[in-house]
Image (cartoon, rainbow, N blue to C red; front, top):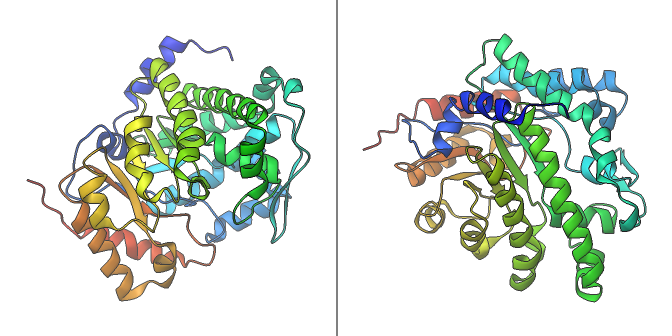
Length: 362
């Protein structure tokens, strides 16, 4: 990619002015920054309208004008503190040569695992060039539409989670084939994890160079592993990605989201050196405030079903989270993505409750 890296780094530093970026740098505010996982999605009528013109989900991901449009839709409607690139974690295996399709009501379906010796990461970037173009368009449009202080989050799936889909070839409850391969063929599995670690690092690097000023790493299936394997396949590769990114981009915050990590959250935060720890819905805010927020800023962790339900319980849970995390840097988010049947009015309710909470920091 013909980009002047030093010049781009200086440009990126200039974008670190948003509320989310400042929070991840350790600052606190009267109310926390807000963004929501899957904030660009099927709960929005404008998203459905745009998706219908794409033909299928992958076309939507790989068409920069459409992918940038759906990224911006929730910013225009709700004025979140961050936009997150609209894409999918599985564009990485797809770009590495593995067949990928999204079947209606069945989620992703992948083809046979490619021969690892034939994977060429130089072609990988050519395949992903539409995603990089999308990032550039989003950054430009945020500035043009009056959202210049809105942060732009780039993201990747973590190596373990990507491997789960590549080997089991679909979403499952426990990814038995992947876990078996990791134990019975550790040399081959290690080779795959190393390839994915390199691919994710390069993919995120290009997103940063094209305008993303915050990164999130999704490890959606971290919770299926026992502790020793969690350390080997979740912590170690993630640590390597973050170390590599921070060597080149020391100012870029990285949010890690090892969903289901349970009592390994603290070890993950310390060992990977994530800037911020994304929490799933199973983590009690009281526990997180005492044991995790003392390590780094935290993000989360409202139950998406509570948001879907709305009403008094939504207000109660929002204020409970805010009360527990006040006084230290934290980011308001969900513990997983917005459910497709969530009324947009409930998002407005959430934002109103948070904005009116009026936290006073010492």
